[in-house]
Amino acid sequence: MEEHLVRCRLKPWSPHNFSYPLTPIHFHTIKADSVLGKHHLNRIMKEAKTVKSIVIYATKYGSTAEVAKRIKAELGGEARLCNIMTDSVPPLDVYDTVILGGSIYVGKVQKKLTNYISRNLNSLLTKNVGLYLCAGETKEEGRLQFLQKAYPDTLYRHAAVKEVLGYAYAFDKMNFLERWIIKKIKGDNISTAEYDNDGISQFAAVLNQKGSTP
Image (cartoon, rainbow, N blue to C red; front, side, top):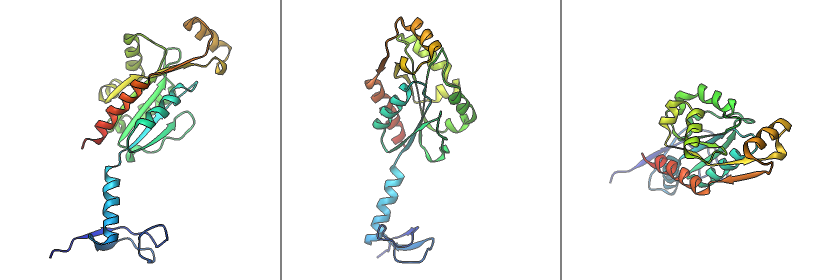
């Protein structure tokens, strides 16, 4: 009978893993139909199927961060959040799906986000990409224009999905000039937040479907 073997990388023994009580070694060959072999095969298959995603976002008043959290909750596999305004963005090579999000302020998206995209465009074009914005624009034509202006054309066309998913006006977080500008645009000084929950679910569903396709 043919004997099936699996070559596994084993850690030094501990009560928390299934390795033999060996001094550190790199590889060990075990029978695939043994308890240990089945354990390693199951772990290998699980890791192979796990889609890893990262949501990289820039936020000013919190709306983009809130949408990022809601997208993360809808994503399959492992997902991570990264606020580009405060955090260092990890290397993208371990991620299958990359979601980029920003907010429109005085007609433009955050410069830190656009600079990051410019530096990493080639890498982003190899990923399953989703693009979103937070903006108070209600007309479809205006929302489309914001999206097209916020992201490079090559990335915009490459993205599996791109949407405006909400907005927030937080007057308590604005300085005097910001409050004056937003009041002129909005017509009042009442703090408001709206999120497109159905749109967020659909946005994540597209990425989940594409990310799971070999």
